[in-house]
Image (cartoon, rainbow, N blue to C red; front, side):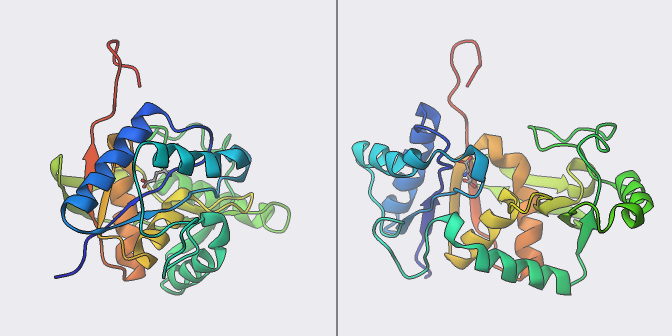
Length: 248
Ligand code: GLU
């Protein structure tokens, strides 16, 4: 039997809030309850939003909660580094691999260009479909050479199916729900979607326990796992902590 490998992957944009702490506790409990290993990965690729003090701060907060991890930025481990800011070589390699399969394209459309597009749920931005691809084709020759493109992954047709350990069977038509995914932004930053898949894959993560706010990202991530030939982890999306008025 393969050993369970769980993880918690905070973005160090400030102190952990109660919801993060609860998710960390559940992910840790899951791994520990089955004798698995627990990995701590710091998701500090979103340069402008990262608060440097929060990297060490988040680890301190988790230790204060009584959690421990077998692999992480402070304790090392066999599949590090455990900070995304130090893992660009892995993302480059994945991008190259996806490019070879013909599923990466340059996108010159700006946020303003995309304003008219339908919106994907949960702040994932506009749905990038046939109309957007067409508009991109129309502007690319004029913009190439003057403007850095974002790189997108073509999600293709057909539904993505998976069974969430908490929410049960899920079927998502990626093209309808989100469309082609940004994997590298026009400003050169890696997109969360690519980094999280490459890292969960390279770190051998078998179980992802995380907040239900990330459920809408999962199908796209699975499409990336498949395209990269990486084994899919099992997901458990746990309900968010809400106050009496339903706010996070
Ligand atoms: N870094 C992400 C966040 O803090 C979590 C990523 C994940 O669990 O997949 O929202």
